Image (cartoon, rainbow, N blue to C red):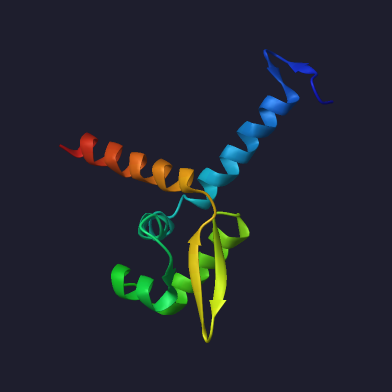
Length: 107
């Protein structure tokens, strides 16, 4: 199927759209967007994110699991804590652009 034409897209091109859709679904919750925005400034532990976002720890942890499962964030154990960071800095730019766009449309 690689390289076959589907309309005007190749199958490999469509796979990129599917991956982009999966990324956007992973970012579809406002708290996950906020987490990614925070991680765009550098790695954070769960308690840092809880403090910064004002959200309960179980909720932050649940959304970090979703983001980790989608390959958006990674966690590195540091003693008793896990430090989370973005897998790819492009994701921070996507979120920053989306938030900036949303703010522009509200003015």
